[in-house]
Amino acid sequence: MQVKQIHGITDIAAAEWNALAGSGYPFIRHEFLAALEQSGSVSEQTGWSPRHLLVYDQAELIALLPLYLKTHSYGEFVFDQQWAAAYRQHGLAYYPKWLSAIPLTPCPGPRLLLKNSSDQARVMRLLFDWIRDQSIEKGLSSWHCLFPEERQAEQWHALGLQRREGVQFHWFNKGYRDFDDYLDAFTAAKRKMIRRERRRVNEAGIELRRVPGNRVTDAEWQAFYRFYALTYWKKGSEPYLAPDFFTRCAATMGERMLLTQATLHGETVAAALSFVGGDTLYGRYWGCREDHDALHFEACYYQGLDYCLEHGLQRFDSGAQGEHKIARGFEPVITSSAHWIRDAGFAAAVGRFLARERPTVRAYRQNAADLLPFKK
Figure 1 (cartoon, rainbow, N blue to C red):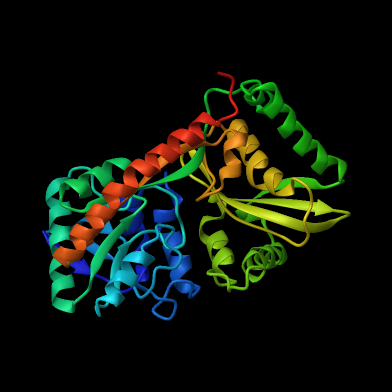
Figure 2: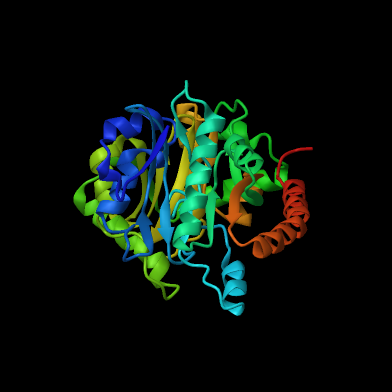
């Protein structure tokens, strides 16, 4: 087996990549990664230099690993800035570093793509050895694999990577017939709260419509981008994604996108964008022109739940953070990342840090679970 490195997703044909990517997880698809790169959202200039790894057995492609050379830690949602600061204090360089992740996308899923018949343990060892050797040769500090699916996280840990845990809030479909059936599982107080929130949006005269991405017009995408950008400008920062990222996605994978638009007096005042996976809805981006009571909850969560229930989806991954999701039935789940630090002394220090952090993370998850709104 041999490892080949490419410097852009377009260096491999979409059909070859997607033959290993499958259709269940939209963010690992060639179309999504290409939209990030071709729009300039992910590039050397933005601190995300693509360096994807391909594994061949003879002339056959058997494995893929998204890989980036990072010069910062922005847009990762697994925070290692303290580690970088410790490096600086000792006169060492933490950046650049290797990163296997979906840029700007904290949604757990497959990171290593593997042909079914391939020897997974052997392929993972080959890739790990390649990254380690390149890190030593080029003087890179570390390699990080963010939000891999649980099985892959365990396998990277078995190879010697240190495992870190976090918490997100996901919704699970437990056979609910519709939204009212879902609310029947709530305590009376929480059920009343959600019905009141939905009623307030309706009483304000706001109408919601869900539009598949391949039916959204260019003007509607432009309006959505302004909403998306406003969420950053309000905080004094610049948006990560370029204006044509969304239109590029819509042109190649629009059927996997769902735009929820909120209109008032014929004018769009807010919108939320989700991606549709095999059995999961992924809530990703939101923005509004003006604030309205409970509109964020309606557009980002309740409309998504309605869509899941109508289409039989089993999970709603609404993104990172957001403790307000607990009262709306989103359950705390453990997420994972895997980390290899080249310097033995720093690796030991990171290991001690993670050993202290892990019980705190798990206690937080349990405390959050105790606050869920369901009847006991």
